[in-house]
Image (cartoon, helix red, strand yellow):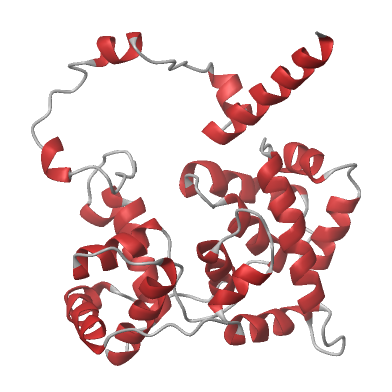
Length: 287
C-alpha cells in the first residue's frame, strides 16, 4: 500500500482548529445495533440524506426482520431473492441497482471476515477487523462506488476509533489549511490532530458531520437540513430573495415535481434516473 506522508505543520494547524470544537466533541455511546443493520446503514447512507432516507428504512427493516441479526443472516435473506435489486426494492423500499450490488458485495466481504475464526462470535471477528484494517484496503476490494468514506464508515460502525473522509471532513480540513486535500490526507490529518489533543477521533468525526449535515440541530434553528455544496460561497447567499427567479429557472430546466406516492417509491435522484433508464432500455428493445 502507498505510504502517505503528512507535514507536521499541517497536523499542528488542524489540531489548533480542533481545540476550538474540542469542548463539543462528546464521547460516542457504543452502537448496540445488530451487524446486519450496521451494514445496511453503511451502504444506504452513501450520498443520500441520512435522516430522511436511511433512518426510516432501518426502522422498518428491524420491525419486519427482528431475527436478521448477523451479517450471515442478512446474506441468507438476500439469497432468498432472485436478485439483490429485488431484495433492496421489496425489503428496503429503495430503487437503486448500484446500491443493491454494492450491498451484496459488502455483505459477501464481511461474511468472509465474520467466519474467519469460527470459534469466535461474528461481532468479535468484525470488531477485530475494524480495529486493524488499513483505510487504503478499500482500493483492493473492487467494489464499485464503495470508496474510502464508505469503507471507513463501515469500520466506525464496527468499533474503530477513526474518521470517514466524506465531504464534511474534507471540507473541514480544506478550510483549515486553505488548500485542496485528498481523502486519505484529510483522514490522516484528522486522526493525528485528534490523538495529539487526546480526543476521540470518532467523536470529532461525529461533531463535524452533524455540523455539516444537521446545521439546524447544531444551532437550534428550524431550517431544513440541506447541505451546501462546496462550490458555493455561503456569503453570497446571505441576502437573497426567496423565489425571486423561480419561474425563470423552472422554465429553463427539466425540473419535475413528483407526486408523494412516487417520491416515496423513488426517494433519491439516483433512483429516479435508474428507473427511467430501465424504461428507456425496454422502449429501445421494442423498436
